[in-house]
Image 1: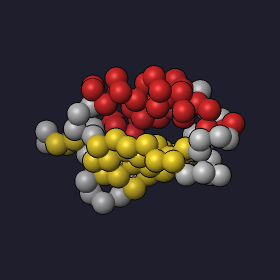
Image 2 (image 1 turned 120 degrees about the vertical axis):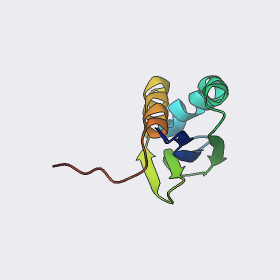
Image 3 (image 1 turned 45 degrees about the vertical axis):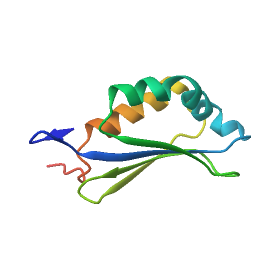
Image 4 (image 1 turned 90 degrees about the horizontal axis):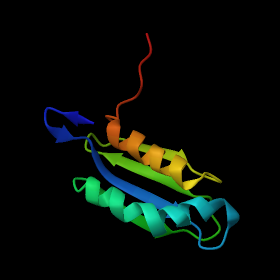
Length: 98
């Protein structure tokens, strides 16, 4: 999300395991979807880190200092990419419901 012309998402980290079945979708995202997504969003620093024996997660860091973590265990690549877009389009602030 852009606030006053500044994108709020600073860094997006995709953590995955190289051999577990729960990371299958995350590995497919890295192979096929990650480079086109990065080309469309050059303002976001994107990295993929290998964490053996752990379930995959998306970790977002915003310029206001907040973090948001989404569990992407057993998700399909399209669902993971949708979460990446949702994180990019959010401001990083806590949700307030009236």
